[in-house]
Image (cartoon, rainbow, N blue to C red; front, top):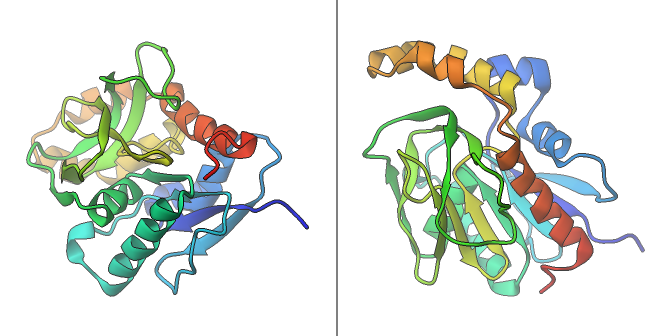
Length: 238
């Protein structure tokens, strides 16, 4: 019998310019994971999502949707994630996935009062954590309007950015959420900035400066790899 797979839970698709060149979030996440022995299974949260506690680990993607919509599939996905966390399944939520976890476990998601955060930005670490190394500067790629504005009970803040005070959170012994996108490299980040350029300018942000700062954000990408390495090695076993 094969080892349990890592479930990649898809909650949306990348912006068109990125999807056409590089594929969906499942492909981006699996590519960012790098070579390894893990087996991945893609699940679509917008369809009926099965229980997640039988998987070795779970990674939840980003989305253009908003947790605040409270659509039936969003509520159902939150329930599955809460069940998985209670069962001790290792879970990593990315952007929208981070927000789903925060809301599912008792926190609150809302539109970020500090406005849109997009591009390659610096994350300030405020706590030690096995998914985060001592690399400096710790750069991550961001694109979001909503944020976890209130953390759930028992959550530990790991990192923040200038525009998001809850950019990296440990929600439980085996559950993490990151507002940034470890699967987004410089090419995909540039596609997002180009695709959102009208909104960026309309909101008074410096489009040229955002473009000039775009980078691979390798420290952020390494967080995904450390999570998957921990799952493979059994360090996060329930």
